[in-house]
Length: 90
Image 1: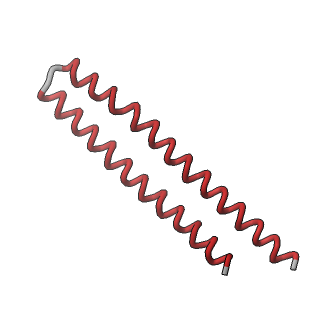
Image 2: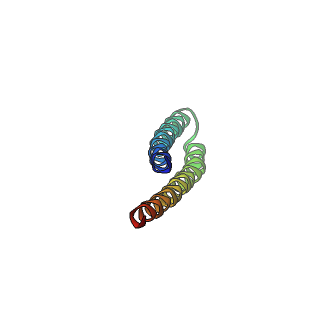
Image 3: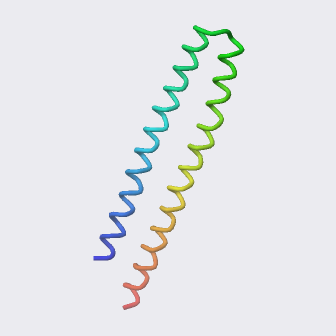
């Protein structure tokens, strides 16, 4: 029963990781499109500032979210290994 719960958690981590990647890519594309539109409508210095201001936080946030999922996946895998070791010893 515990093994199936751990397996479900691991599958859930992978699903959430894929979903967050899709959301991140969509957000990044929207920011890119908005910066192109701003460049077309505004003066070039304003568009440059907008693009630079939006790209830095998005990149950092994407790396941070990815590291959170990887850390959680590592913990779930460690629990799974401990559980498998305990079963083999019995």
